[in-house]
Amino acid sequence: MVRPPKLLIAVLLACALGARGAAAAPAEGSTPPYEGDLMKIAELLGALHYLRPLCGAAGEAQRWRTEMQTLMDAEQPSDARKGKLVAAFNAGYSSYATVYRTCTPAAAMAVQRQMEEGAKLSHDIVVRFGGN
Image 1 (cartoon, rainbow, N blue to C red):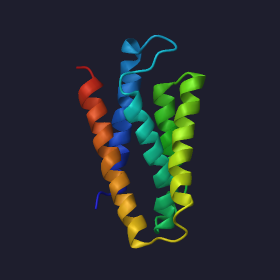
Image 2 (cartoon, rainbow, N blue to C red; image 1 turned 120 degrees about the horizontal axis):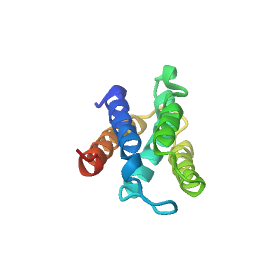
Image 3 (cartoon, rainbow, N blue to C red; image 1 turned 90 degrees about the horizontal axis):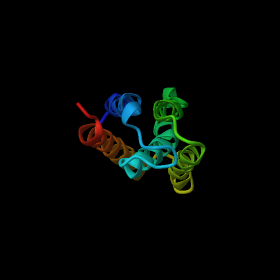
């Protein structure tokens, strides 16, 4: 199973891309070429915000929301993009909250998939759009 620190590192790398890419940022009102991946990461963070504490990671009650805020701080999105990122996070959270009330084997497997996908997406963003 992929452990939370690996995704944390991947998310921080994506955040570094946002901070480092400020000079090469798209013009106001446009979206970066990694927008779809970023929205998926936001959705994954929302899912983890619900699932990780449900599956016994009680110490992570606010961790994934904090990671989302770190991502938003690095991206410094316009109000419209911020709204979309928040909506993606909330969709990830609610999609699992409506299905799981306890940590089942399927919920634990979903956590593993979310972690792996988040790490891959974050890595791909940095590799493709990280510049130097």
